[in-house]
Image (tube, rainbow, N blue to C red; front, side, top):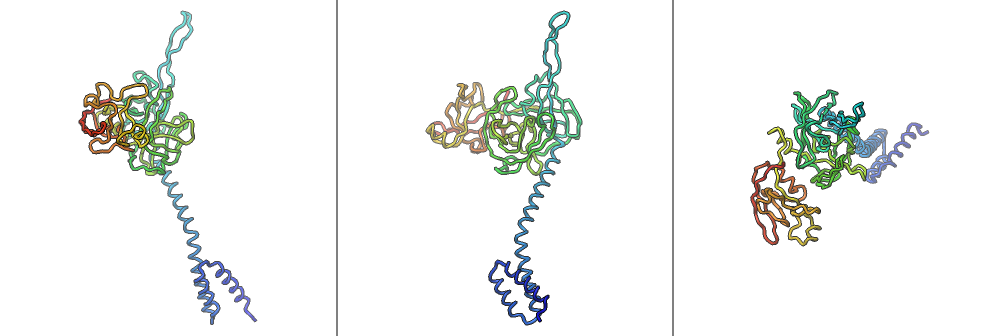
Length: 403
């Protein structure tokens, strides 16, 4: 009579053999099984089947385990990055005097009271209290009479001093007076690529302090015109686009990478769409930071031109000899392409010139004319290569300072 245990083992072995996808292994194991002379051979066949089945199972399970590990790593990196930066992120509330008319026994009287004008976000860039934010966060008040109230993530409160607004970009600097303050580390925005993970941190709606949203870099090198809360337009160039939600109140907050390094300053949102936010690349902000550290104020170099960055479409439309560079052109309001008494005017630049190189740096894509000029300081001399009609000319320009 056949041993019942042997019959059960046989059924399980055949089931395992059936699940093996590799026909050569399956046929070889079937051969061993059919030719077995003893229990040892049976055990050997089972062992081989088990190893093969385990190998197949490992190949199916391992990718999921790796994916789970990657998701865990991403989550841990996100938490670490936020925890690294949040101590240096501050809430900014701006107050200024407002007039109101009061009825008194003597008649109508003008009186003044403090009113909240603006609110937003900033972040500490030094241990001695310099704070970077957006210009539009604070420019709704008179800098001579405004009161800037700062709250750190720790809950500690300060009154800040106005240092300056950037004449070139949507940036401003305040200062609180203390020492050993937490401050951010700066990354390298030139290393960003579309799809890079980023996190926006800010004071959402003026009441949800240090809220964080996560997304990716959607595009680089954007140009747009943004309106502040008073409706005043400002042109922004070489901007990072992200789907990390930048809500009202996030303006001036940091955009960070997964290392917790600041790679941008949150500045605008496209209100007609969803998840379309914009940030100024931190490498375009460095001249402001360096200027503050060196001389205690914002000093920006000025060339004094209006331009559009060329592409193949604009070049074909205007029948130009180049499709890369900065075309000097008047504005739609007939504002001149060369500003009077500017360095460009003194160097003899003219409407229709194409600046395609500065000090051997090609003007194209990320290297816009403005971003390259801003690598220098007032009173630096730079060499321009210019396409004028069919000729290439060279001009040396001494930059002056934005006022």
